[in-house]
Length: 354
Ligand SMILES: *Cc1c(COP(=O)(O)O)cnc(C)c1O
Image (cartoon, rainbow, N blue to C red; front, side, top):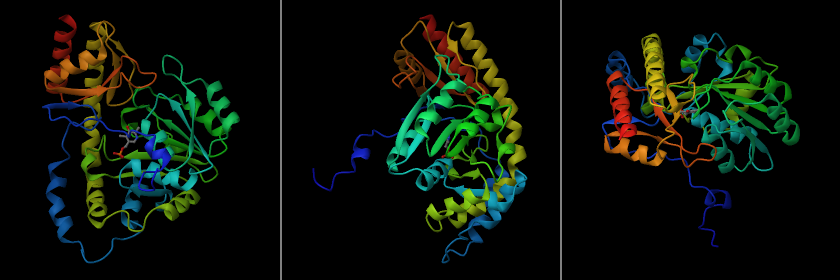
């Protein structure tokens, strides 16, 4: 094979792509269904005007890090920001993973952990969740003792199952881990606990957050990690110089004035989450309890792929997980606006009744 071919690890991969289909109701990628506050959108042109466009950005993003730090009562030296939390994960894996090292995930979970770990040359070891998708502490101990991973991921609440991870599981992981532990909290605002208060200088724990979900800014691509200062210093070595552009820094600083407005919508999403779960259950659909802004479900009486296609015919796009390992027959729906959710539930009633 010529050297114009990608590396072996890349060739073996199909990538992580949620099909973007042009339909009226998109409930497939767990974004916020609400646009960000108008006040923020209006300010963006001023943010753009004030930038010295011929100059490189503030490389350490100091103002942005300071404001994120104050939001979580930590120091700016505990914060690293990147282009989406996916880039945070990539930077962590470039720093602590890589060739000759092992990365642990507990499946089923967010697919990007294994994907980025492999792209960056590490070997992935898999811990298995129980059939109900909860995680046994003994399995955590087994994976840590057998493989001594350099990086271990725990997604809380877990995507795509929606389950909230018990705090004891993270404690068990931290007690047994030999390397870095990443608690991915992309959906923390919808959940009832966060690991942020567990971050200290003498623990190798990193907690990641994103602007893409609760904060209604998926288009902006901003995510961050709260971690011990020594870890942040390590990540900065691996990151590209000026990886955060000036506009993004300014726009994100401005966005942080509107967080309470955006967090007010969390309760709305939670109420709708309950309504969707109960309706689906009353249709005889298996529903997993969710602490996030999406719901994993399995239509027991019908083929999941058929249901997915019929929803699409009705102009509704959900995530088809039915071909993923351990998720046979499962679909995942993001909680949308009230009318979107009603359209989804009506379509489901129609599909399952037919
Ligand atoms: C959506 C998501 C992310 C990625 O978010 P970005 O900040 O948009 O890159 C990370 N982790 C989990 C579990 C997610 O579901």
